[in-house]
Length: 336
Image (cartoon, rainbow, N blue to C red):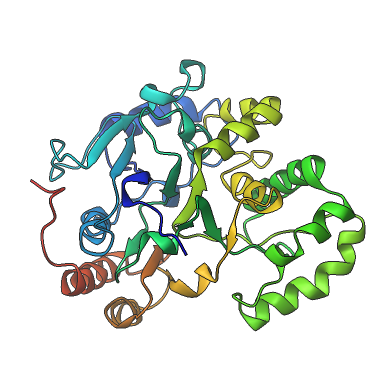
């Protein structure tokens, strides 16, 4: 099978320094007028960003450009003259009427407006790391993103997040749902490349698809997208996306980037892949020694270290940084 050219794949990485006094002052100014989510976990920085960039250099050397999104502040160690790095400020691509924003959703939904962004790109957050080598064909083949589609019933203790997923799903049902469409795409939802558990779940939920899509799984890891997908979603859901972008903080009736992911599934724009098997998901509420051993010992190429409300933050931070120094200790071209 034809490999995707390395010159055609970019990475989009948003970041915020939640400790920046100027940013905090601006956020606090607007918090009083918002009913949205402004919790500290949305913005807390564990000091791990340099290992994200080291992972790019060591394990994804074929990436053409890293588009680093920031409200304006930058980590002091970042070498902004690096030829593979493009600094993208919010005002560079998000329409002015939605700024300033303290929600990840306008930042995500407007990605297609970034100047120079390639048609094929990987979107990821700053809690995601490439810790073992990957190839372009792990993300794109014949111009299509690799992704793991499926059916699921939403379950999460974050009621706001469930509301967002349901808003995504409503838009998907309105745009795509019909029995004919679903069964035409059945090979994307049930596929031998997926795990037995995921396929069984999709098969058990298939009867619900007589009337509607019951739900889709969400994947918190580096994800392959087409810029044209974002453009298509905006064209067909303008009012919904503009409403989300008008919220300075996350709201339960927003949509997020999973709308774009599921749109790719339902439009037949993906190559089925067991990508979820390649991600190790760790939560910061686990013990420090467990986090350290998992980071140093994983054979998965992708790793997510997800922030949660937890105790012993400093102890865990030290353990996690020490573990990353073991596997990604060499300075990258993105550092001064």
